[in-house]
Image (cartoon, rainbow, N blue to C red):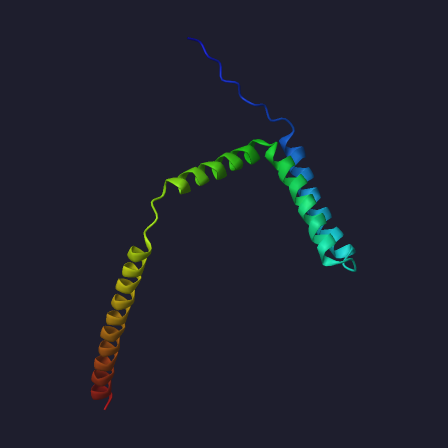
Length: 122
């Protein structure tokens, strides 16, 4: 069994990243240049520029790798067993009690050290 794995070639990655940076700069400059236009139009224009920049970035090796990483993260999130509401409430209550007890202990130590310092200083 002989299988060849085709590796996608990424050519002109530097030029594509330069185009992405140029698109982002054009979006920022255009947003400030057309500041008199309604905000809704500028937001739609910026979303369009961001979409085009994202598509160009996806065509690079690093962009495809980042997209693969994001998809893998979503797969892992679906595997997580989230705690129930009761478990969350119990854990929160335990944390609050421990913080309260720690605060009381630290307050008592502060009072003790303050009293000792006042005895030493006079």
